[in-house]
Amino acid sequence: MMDLDGTLLDTLQDLADSMNSTLADFGFPVHELEKFRYFVGEGMENLVKRSLPDSVRTDPDLVSRCFEMMRRTYERNWNAKTRPYPGIPELLDALTARGLKMAVLSNKPHDVVQKVVSGLLPGWRFDAVMGERPPVPRKPDPTSALEIAKRLGVDPGACLYLGDTAVDMKTADAAGMYAVGALWGFRGAEELIAGGARKLVSKPLELLEML
Image (tube, rainbow, N blue to C red):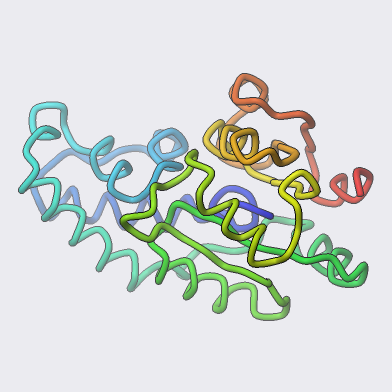
């Protein structure tokens, strides 16, 4: 099982561009790219809230309007600069050759996840592709991870979960899965270890050594 943003795909620039466009339209200050590494990871609504000035984050109507604009903007621009990380195509080829079941679990809205995976990773078969689907709680709640394991007919303890944030590591731990931290993603080793990573990998193909 794999996370999407920061793990399979480098989505940061498109997310940043879409959010900054939304902020500019509302007359709010924009942010440098690096700040978005810590804004993302817990769903698009939280990305919006973290990007907004402190003085307006508690205004639910404003947050809702910014969220809707961000969602529409991102749906138009999600594939402008987003690409698989180096080594990801080779990893997916190797996993497919071994006949292993693969799944994607993201905190992106479910319909967006479906579109992104089919659009940018069309050459591989994923047995499940799942995003945020209210009222199901988002990661790090393990509900969706466990649902995927059940759908695949795999015991959670036999699942490896690859992700790039503490949220992913906590999700894996809560689901009883083997948490592996991707060092090429949005966060660093310290956060991944603190989140419960049992192994860190610096390149995608290193994952094969654990199978």
